[in-house]
Amino acid sequence: QVQLVESGGGLVQAGGSLRLSCAASGSILSINTMRWYRQAPGKQRDMVATITRGGSTNYADSVKGRFTISRDNAKNTVYLQMNSLEPEDTAVYYCNADIGSMHYNYWGQGTQVTVSS
Image (cartoon, rainbow, N blue to C red):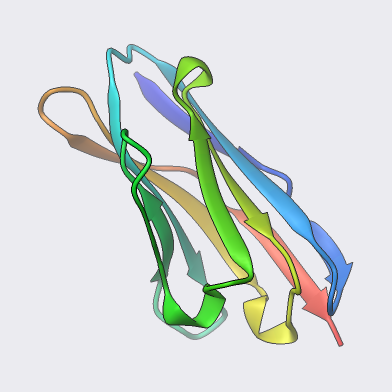
């Protein structure tokens, strides 16, 4: 049983920062690509950032230069540092990961980020 558990969400004023964490636990031999997605009310779930096991990253255009994804392979944890937050960043943020040699895909339960203007 593999679980992804996000933490670090909350309420912040525009221009502020938050750091999200997502820890994977369970029967894990290896974690491949890890990702952050977000879903605002009434909208589809969109990819925010991805990071490979080797550390290569990719970002949505809307967050480039403001968000940074990183990971600690020893702790099976991925992070999302979010700076210069805007009200448009308000959403539920979800962690996603490909785990094991078969690259099974897992989702976390989500953490709410609310940015007030």
